[in-house]
Length: 275
Image (cartoon, rainbow, N blue to C red):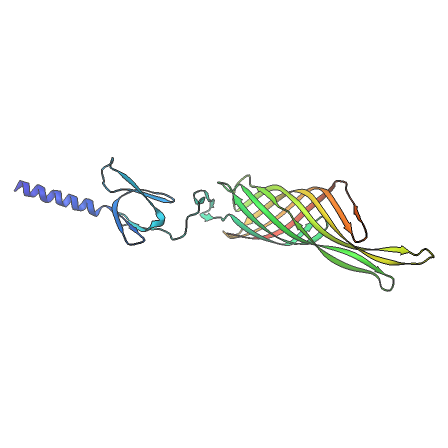
């Protein structure tokens, strides 16, 4: 009688221990029973034998559909792929901020005039303290063509600038974020102007001269961004720098102009989308 009672007691304890086991359900339907010891970012560690010193196993979270714990709690594994650096992706106020930022600058001003621009930024590093940015700008430059019949005729040319650079976020990613960094400002500028050509015997005419100009300089920008939502941000940036090359090529001759180092500046109002 006593032996029978011990047998039934052992069976009951064994049954309870089995029911208390965790179940790892794989996406292909296979069920693994054991004791989950750790749920990590990319892996789940578990033991099949509940003994403390028994063998430990590891399975990738991507293979699992969900986990049913012994207490009845169910943990569903997200189907979203885990990024390599997700463990260090900044979270502020329970909001995840993406590493890619597309920006439109409806107003932008460089040393040659006002215009608009676009940029792409990629945040790198564990804490997203560094950004690689590639702005593209279209700047409008006015010029005058003189005609003796109608006088001066104001027109505009569209100049193209590309300014790759680096942004440093000393305080990391926040809802109000500050950054500073250098940009290499490369400009491809067109210009048109009129000059008066005299005849040897008197009189003359106005000649229209077209030219293209290559500019190269360095600007240190300061950025202030306001993260409105996890994806939308507004910002401004402004900076000063120096232009070192201002080479001009005209239709009549090739020459260099404004070779002296000169001060240049930049200002922009930005609307960004983050992902």
